[in-house]
Image (tube, rainbow, N blue to C red; front, side, top):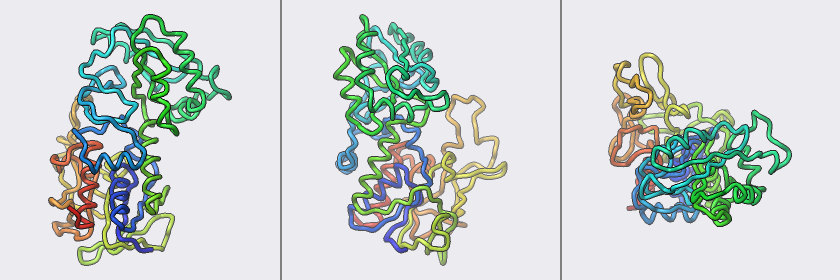
Length: 375
């Protein structure tokens, strides 16, 4: 099978590149193992300040509702972080104090939303907090078992009974001016969070939970749908197991599911992610990129890879594949002519492209522009 471009990795970076190339009239295929960094997505596009027209159109055409409000966002443990561009259901505030009295709502037996820590963090900012629990079994039948009380399973139930949640919250609400709910609404319908806000007579803030991220999975589904509508081929649940490189040009890649049927292309994009998604690997002696064996940018002294204080920035997160200004990597110091590297696998090697979601989007758009020759 032959395409103009084959993309290894189906997360935010891979889908952004695929959508951009399909819009430019190129045929593409994305090979995705399934889970990616969007499953940890906070709902904020870190390091993106005011979005460019190209980024705005990427979101709007995929049906992803965003807002640009420079300020701070609420973190799951009750702390705050600067942000500017976020999904519509993620609140951004001018200051860390967004209310005087706060009602925090959680669900019984749901342990991935830390109500007590959240309350402690908000109280440090001068907000008075009260915590109450709803019984999901009373709202939706059949009741979920203890092993099913995760964000996605709860979200599937709540898509059908969110109005009951609103009614229960209205009963519990006393003199609070703000209600904080776990970010487990709107998995299949992005309008539900806003409808909840309209139904509760107080400010409603959705706070993040432990992964998987409901807004992240929703974003993934919408981008994938947009990519496929444009004619892209999305090979879900597959994995690239090998690549053939001849005279510094990638000829093709082979996947686990396609067996001996190669994916050939004029260009290849590596968007396989960092350590979590196994785009990068390590052993006691080195950090390496396992698929193409690309040159890496990292400190060979293993003692510098981490900071003993867990909460500090960990140096290994900045390590990544070494590329030139055109995002082309090298093997043994020799550039690979038709391969581009994008997303978190770059680590912090291209600070001009930002970090997090900003790095994923900017590097993907740049690679697509280089491939198509568009400005």
